[in-house]
Length: 91
Image (tube, rainbow, N blue to C red; front, side, top):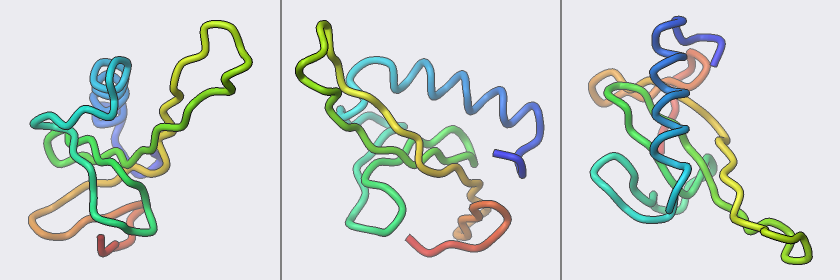
């Protein structure tokens, strides 16, 4: 997230907390599953910003275990170009 401005960083973190805290595997207007790709199975859209994530079950032996969301990468989309860490990426 180093390539994001402070404002973009704040907006993206707030959206991640709000959108992915409950039912992160439910498709919405801002969340969608992606076709198989090397980055992540799910995408969260926040304006031009993108957070790519996956959800894994927590160890079932732990009391009160729930699924855990792992944000694998973040990027910024400008028109049809997605940049992650400043580099153009094809999904």
